[in-house]
Length: 140
Image (cartoon, rainbow, N blue to C red; front, side):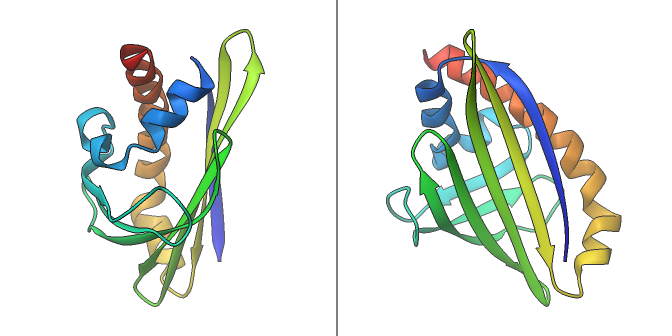
């Protein structure tokens, strides 16, 4: 297993940021990392969905944990292992929110994943955080 994280401080209201971040069907409209996405039920643990990142294969995911306006986690299968992500949203005062994503790759595919996708994912996460700020402000 290996893991990596990215974080940023963005401006906005935590409730608006949460609404945008958990509106799975809208991800491709504002998130430069996502090409397709859907959710097959309410945004809660056990609900499944599908996501297709740009430049990577798509596949199903399962929401594993949700703390409203604080964090959500998901898990997806990858060859011979799993991809786990934890998304956090922490108000830090003055209309600012620390957003972060922690990713764990489990299984023998981890070194290949790291070599091929980690650098691009790190860069995309910073663009995603910036786009989240803009979309949350747009939706008000």
